[in-house]
Image (cartoon, rainbow, N blue to C red):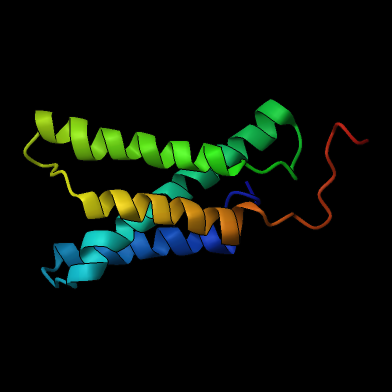
Length: 127
């Protein structure tokens, strides 16, 4: 669990809480309210799934997702939330800028979070 709650992931969670609190209080911050949650969606999902993958699938705490995995997460999220879900629910609206932010978030994660190695981590495969 320690690896799950690293500073970047906690920042994603804090941003999400602040934005949703602002929405609840009707304090609209247009660009942040509309796109920042989409930008951090892929990094947050990737971090949770990577933690699970490291722990239970590959048993290697230094494993990172390749870029094409992250781009696939962005593509899947885009299709689900910007194309399919708006068809079934009025709560969702298709927005091409959201798609751009999902992909930007995946590139951000790859650059600043996904490639960080955990110092002192020892994999079960190298013991």
